[in-house]
Image 1 (cartoon, rainbow, N blue to C red):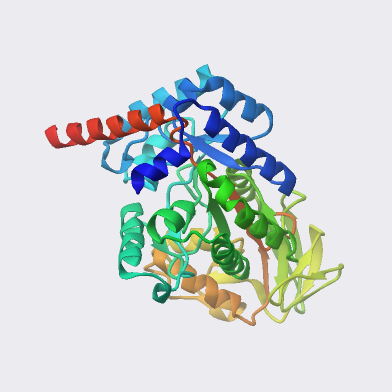
Image 2: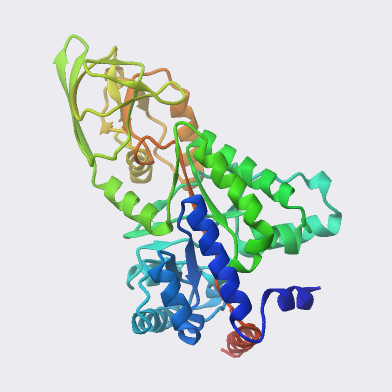
Length: 426
């Protein structure tokens, strides 16, 4: 079955795959979005004219490794060498890039460091899986295959973690969502386009409700089978209000870096009045709840109101920022700031509508419960939202390119065999 699948996806020449890429580009153009295609450097080197043509038509590319091998078993030195060769290849072929996605979505503790030291702005290798698949609908064998894939990808459950970009040492990490087209067809045996539409739609709904990011992965070789499902999810996103921001991985990275530079200042004027001054770009989404202001506001989502003014007066029964105990973990304070809240360290809990004194120990798994707790609070709050231009959530469409012909696929097998052989002899 695997061999038949490969034969259907690739030909001896590049013509079949070229047509699929052009179809993908046409679908994206018609639906009004730009996909991001991570591509292995050796594939770019073998097919530079095709990739340059797609780039010139507006398609975004990222690095998918130098060759398609498992970075999760590579040393920092090996990864740095591969990144250097990949960068040189992209520059030689005159195809710009900003980020990276690991083959097999597999990295290790050394990957982020090696990427930060190279010319990369983002890494979209962390897999996350959404609880939208009903185990009862699938055979035991299919479900076992799907679970094995999640384990291999080192995927995180979105039930436990926020699905958002995160900045680490100057690198923006952007999670990639599972199930993707490969999980549907190769693992779960789903060959019904309507079912795929339903599942992707459910992921979008969850991401939208939570204000999170849905990075949809659809490999170009399956565009003909999945283009209906892709169209459905884009149309669903376009119909929501507040809107969904449909963006490329580069645009998300640039926004996240821009957002990190925002600052704010709130000064008490007495009698429950505060003057707020916000230093941010024009597309920042500024939200407030449970307080009044002297300028126009718009109802936004989940009790929040949005405000376009950057200097204004707030009327509030309590200081509309978050107070934290002085022994709070720096990780907790950084998280709250990354969520757009104004944070003050203090030993005066009575001065704040929200005061947190239980953050001395704080880990990534604590982020989602804290975020949900703050969302449920009735205290007055002012914050920057996660996404620009009043968007509630974000959607990005991506598709990895690791082979264009059967010859490319054959080389990929040899490359993985050679890497495994080296790993067992060193």
